[in-house]
Image (cartoon, rainbow, N blue to C red):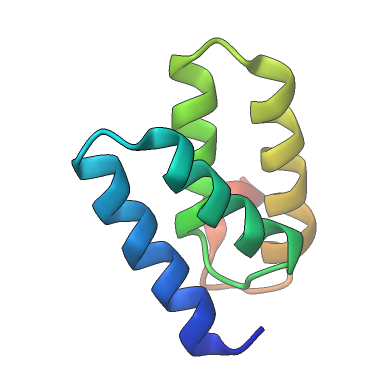
Amino acid sequence: MTLDEFVNNNLMGKHLESIGDVEGAINLYEKNVAFEFDGSHPYTRLCIIYRKRKQYDEEIRVANAAVKNLCQNSKKPYFRE
């Protein structure tokens, strides 16, 4: 995927969340996670969504993916900590 596709997925996911289509947003964020996007937005949003839904296994899976994919980037301390 290209950077533009990652960014578009994040922007569209944000929009879908705002209009109540959380499932659609999850699908877009999950695509970014699957392709190891180097930005915190999809990981953060998925963790929040899964926590609210009490889907703790999914939250942990996404958090672990964030640690793996973001920890090398010193500009992304949230998941590293």
